[in-house]
Length: 446
Image (cartoon, rainbow, N blue to C red):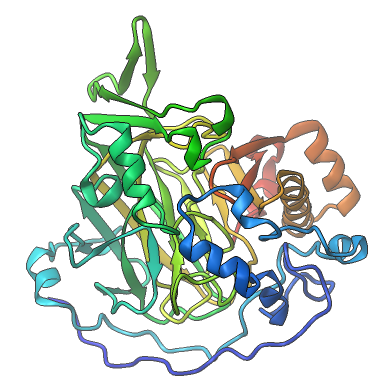
């Protein structure tokens, strides 16, 4: 049984206005700052918000002006260069809290075993009470509250459309379910899970401990009329392709003499987004489709077992949501989907870092630091990734911005994460082996 906790913070973030671009964060010259009213500049007009709520499909054209630098002056864009700025207001430091009481259904399904390296292990089943279609809903009470260092096990997660996507289900039915739920993503989202003591300005470190897919998966593109995917005009007919996974060989037979090595990861994992960054479908409810400063539907294929994702906290408790099980995905995800599946188990460990003041998520593997940039405009996402990576290198490696600019050009790779989630993504692969000795040991995300 969990220890009980009755403390719930009622403190509200204090917002400050700074005149700077709204895409990458801004702050003082040392690269620290506060979440300000400029985040609200990215919100939709009422008409655009209504279009999201009532549209019959989700695609880039329905988001003209969304998270784009168009309309902003060049000067403002150039000033929006601080990777470490644009952060939530610094709240009071809180003493360490114990685990709050949990619903009986969660207590029943929890493995109470303590492991020295995993903290308390919380088992969160996928049920109609814990899973919701295609949204991050901050109005829901937390399924469970965890402490820093605890582990969450998600056994037998659901496939898309609340587990309706199964081998044999035709693409027309999948497309109809998308049309029947305007504004929502196809993802079966589990959450929220609250982190005790998490406040705006903090950073969550998510460690991917175990990612085990089930033995089937499918990839699909919607009919072109839904205008999803990269090339809807080229493919008027949709298609879904189901395959049986060879889990012993960790391979997917895609066709005769075509075998795809598996690299399972959750396409969607994030926290509650900052207020007014996305147009809400209703108060406190946002679509699971676009990624952003809260991470979310990042679709970064490097986030497999052994990886870490560092996510800025924007709301008290952080509020973790996940879904979108992938067996494997290529960078770009151009048809709309990865090889979508269910997880036999997704297991993550969550650590809380107080007041680290990050503006965007950063990932880390054993071989790379991975810096992200996102925007509706792929060119601007590329610029955001470059600026964020320059700031990362100059602040961690102690080199000048000009040297960081050059190092990125000659030794680092910029990859298109995905182009199908309204907000496009670019990730920068910074090899750790560029750095040796004490410098390599010194570089850390938090």
